[in-house]
Length: 267
Ligand SMILES: Nc1ncnc2c1ncn2[C@@H]1O[C@H](COP(=O)(O)OP(=O)(O)O)[C@@H](O)[C@H]1O
Ligand SMILES: Cc1ncsc1CCOP(=O)(O)O
Ligand SMILES: [Mg+2]
Image (cartoon, rainbow, N blue to C red; front, top):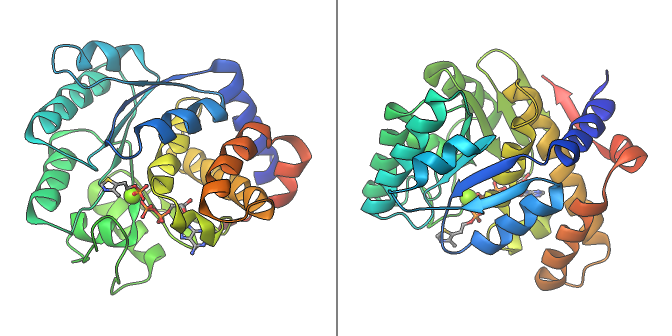
């Protein structure tokens, strides 16, 4: 199968399986990421109480942990959910939002990575640099400069942590420490709407729920998501109409339109 066919097949499989994706996520993006998950064809649930997160995680086909508006309580809930998921063989996708901005965020991200079995780590370049010791400086939740090429960093961090690493940006890089894939789909308008990185993580989780190989799932998900953004941008007047159009494009994009547009390269 070529990449175009693979992306179509996985996008279709998400619709057929309608996997439940348990999110412990941040206050900013809760609604957007739930709607993105639905538009892709998966089923979102957001649940945070320590009393229920392990049970909810066990019901899901993938668990998203996103520390965007972290509190000490929420971190405990993430650890409970992550342990329960891994014990049941359910993949955990971690988005270390804002790692590198404050010591609490950096230390928490590193603790989650150390104490849980993370299946896919997805962040912007400075977040991944910060959690892995490359020394990234994150401006709030937005990417700052990093000192190494993002693809090289993705492969090195994946190797060091023994997990799939996804570094997003104008070009996205996905690696398991050996393979390195670049995805060139996307649109600059994605940087004008909050939660588009978190939404990318949700789409990756939906694809990972139906595809055991994290590199394949990550690359296919980001090509599909980035291409949906390109389609949405074509009919948008600015960030507000773009956000609405992105949901529509994610919902509609399939078949030949999808196969023709994906820009995935194995490096
Ligand atoms: N300059 C850009 N041009 C095109 N796509 C981009 C650009 N910057 C980021 N993206 C895309 O936006 C999404 C969010 O990535 P990113 O901005 O790195 O995450 P975050 O919002 O967590 O910082 C990804 O799908 C990425 O491919
Ligand atoms: C603005 C903001 N502040 C805390 S979490 C958050 C949302 C970040 O979303 P994304 O990383 O997808 O841009
Ligand atoms: Mg982010």
